[in-house]
Length: 250
Length: 50
Length: 218
Image 1 (tube, each protein chain N blue to C red):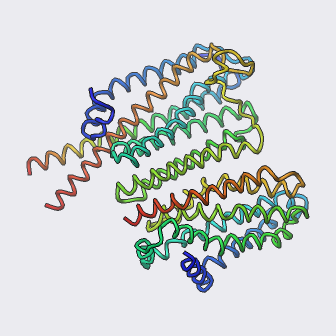
Image 2: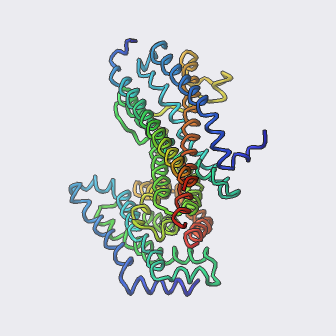
């Protein structure tokens, strides 16, 4: 077993993916099914939100993955810019559509949840607005990948865009705080105070937390499986391109 | 089937939309993976034979 | 760098390109808004700062793609890349020329156009101050976007999509300053944040812009 950098070799990476993928996708499917079925059928309704609380098993994990997908793209972009490993750039490219879909799920379930709870589909609340901006960043990032012919140039340009975009995404997140505190409740799942029980703010109670944790694990595993699969697809495409180019030369 | 009360529409549509989006994403990923894999195998076979 | 700035300014004024276009667009937006919203004085005064900021931002966006595209087409950009002036300086000069031909005229035109929208009397000063502080950031971010998409087919559309989310913080702070000014509230905090944003962008963006320009010219 070598270091992590061994998988910078595309062939080694593709072999690893082929070995790991069945296991990973089975685990993702199992966790997702368990978390969602548990949440949907076997949890009580919230005393204030009624049955809509069941949306949490989709909304929170999707939103979490949407944000962390961008962080993963940022890390992969940095690795590409510094160490020039092609697999890293391709992984960033592969993660973007997954992140976009997760953002859309977060927005869609949020809108459906907000309609009965807040009385409107959409509010210009800081968290919601920040997610909309994240959605725009994903769209721009994907569009830039599509627009550039040369793969290395595309990887460089999108990496820089990812870095600059990260800075501006954080700026926007805190700039929208200016308007108001918003309707969206604060972070109520992952909070130090909530875990140690030291704060009195509302948090997700344990009945809802256990299936939510399983569902989050499912979403993360699904994200990993999809990114690995899509990265391998990109590697195959790149190799195919190289072979075709050589055939044309011959 | 649990009793969803008056929020049945909201909950079911949230699940429907999300699962649909996820299924589409997985489907597209699998399809393109299969297509790329087949095209690569063909190309490598061509190179060996030809 | 000064010579490059002068040259760009002369080209912009002589060709009548970006210079008139942005101003005309700004004028059209502010004149059309009352037709769409109706002439109610109170309502217009309420939205005036936001409308003026949106107009200025879109007018800026409109002239971005010609910032580098024309120089790329006739090969000037390749010459500039081999010139002793570092590309960071080129980006800065380009953004400066863009600001002088769009940002500054927009700032000056905003006050008279505010009259058309019944802007509150106290708001003129803060509107101009916020535009003066914010438009350099718009030009600089735009220069980064232009460098990112230079030489691409259908670059204009992509440029708008990429630059739009980057403009959000500037727009929020700028419009907040103008709104608070018009309503007679304290403007110190958002104004300071706006200035900090502009200065940060001016300091960091030339490097990012030059990096992507180098990649694109490779």
